[in-house]
Image 1 (tube, helix red, strand yellow):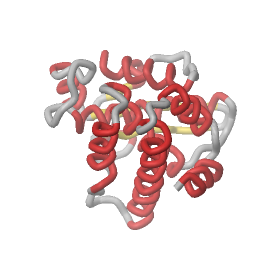
Image 2: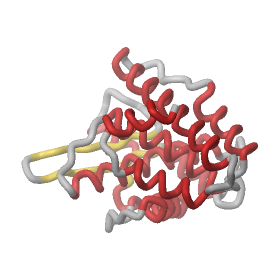
Image 3: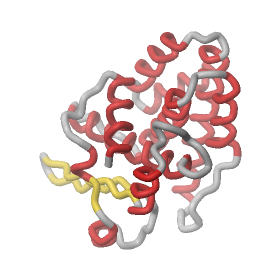
Length: 212
């Protein structure tokens, strides 16, 4: 769980938010996931059950993902041996943090908003885990957004949601790269990312449309 804890600390520090909880305490195994969501067998799932005045949340990551990140520490090196699992971990932790932060201020959040923010978080985390250089930025963008594939069991609405999130995150990442990474204006990029994080979905999409 150390990799998840580091991702959580990194994202909370980047965005200057605090959930006050440890994501590792909310990770559940396959049996519990199958009990709550038997129809889906995704390798990463945020599970949310809401009742009046209360929200219960859990994060599922395939045990092999956690095992691989424990063996091949992404903090030391990212490569084909661990990048895919690292991205799943970032996505799950991003969903967890964003959902908790929105729940704390009683702000509704859509699945599209969660997916869009997670896609941005994957790009930024990869970039900051290595070096914020143009060559690496372009390589990560191609890897993350260039040839996106979707799970075959997704219905048409779900595929459309993931496609919209992917396309918009790609456009935003390209703008960040051109505006900040290429000019080595990293502190200013971090300030922009914090501003973007606090926007609602409509404002995020509007920002991307204007930027692109």
